[in-house]
Amino acid sequence: MFDLSGKVAIVTGASRGIGRAVATLLAARGAHVIAAARGDHAAPTVAAIHGAGGGAEAASVDVTDSGAVEAVVAGALARHGRIDILVNNAGITRDQLLLRMKRDDWDQVIATNLTAAFVFAQAVLRPMIRQRGGRIVSISSVVGQTGNAGQANYAASKAGLIGFSRALAREVASRHVTVNVVAPGLIDTDMTRAISGQAQGDWAAQIPLGRLGDAADVAAAVCFLASDEASYITGQVLAVNGGMYM
Image 1 (cartoon, rainbow, N blue to C red):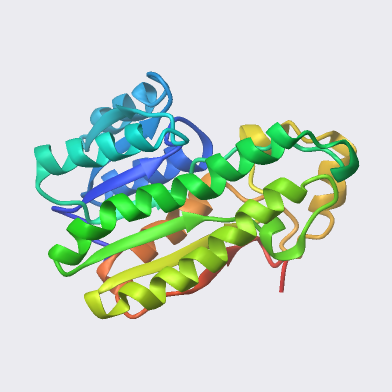
Image 2 (image 1 turned 90 degrees about the horizontal axis):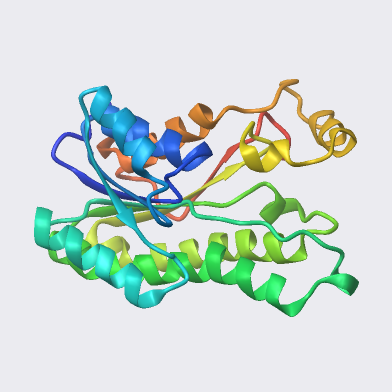
């Protein structure tokens, strides 16, 4: 089940947290993973995959640089001849109340969290359509469904991923390319650890399952949507939030 042998996957933001967990699990299921991150930050992820006997390579890319994104995709195609899975995971926060939010904080979050997904998806679509199949999975957030004070930029970017994915799913379904979203809740990562103790406690109190999620919980959902078992699922949002949003 969930055998990804022979598949080639690109995972953005693969240096840590959810991205690293996703890359590691896809490789464990047999995919060859291109772990994309800034600089050499994906090197530990690739080393861990190699240590477990999996196949992976690092790709240095600033996801807000369209030319760099296209070069990563072109390089992957040149080396492997195909791209089967794209996981749009790269994301940042620049939290601030809207009245105090700087335009650059808005622009950077939208560029990293939303526009980069558009550029990567556009770059991989042609080869996916040519090979008559592919999986695109984007990582949104429960905040994109509920909103959150002080995160207008982040919530907009994550809600945008949902609308973008549903529209794209309709465009490419006839070509056997599925497009789905995973929307995590409060997951134990570096990003959530930066939230103040009081705020984190307030969020955690809203989780019916009574705990923060783990990056592995999100990775499992992505692995499912990337597999053949999910071939009849497209345009959907799979919530991984412990019941936080229902």
